[in-house]
Image (cartoon, rainbow, N blue to C red; front, top):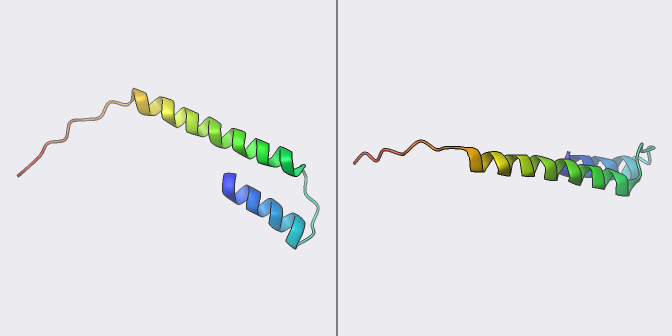
Length: 58
């Protein structure tokens, strides 16, 4: 959504001159909110993960 959605918005509005459903600033704000919420969730779960020890064979 982050890159593709912003790109698609621009193509739809400026290349195809088709109507868009949202204001550009609102669409970018929504995309950033979704991206950052996902990033925050991944960062939280990364600190909770326990990694199995790696056995070195050699």
